[in-house]
Image 1: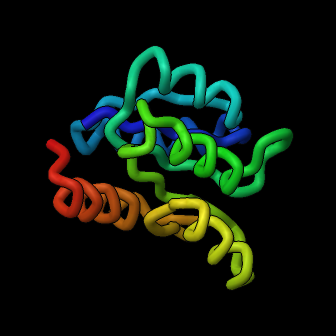
Image 2: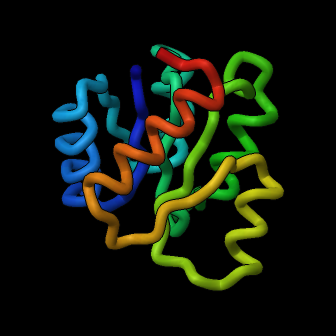
Length: 124
């Protein structure tokens, strides 16, 4: 499965990429929402895992942009966040995110969430 990770922290992106590559997935990294949208247009991913708090375009704005684009709207998005405020998490869900994983995360937790999404959406 091709997964895009979007996070303004290089360390977080590398951690996610390493975890997912070890689980057999292909990973594309983006530093911000704008870069993610450009990359998604060039090489569509099967799943996006995005940080919530990023400069210029936060995770909810990215999800809204993905879900409003007919070419991209079928891509499921998981938020990866330090947010605990119910209102912020509900905002992401209303934008179209299918769920979230709290930071810091365990590798097994991330891989299990990806597997669950793959099964739910029929992604191989």
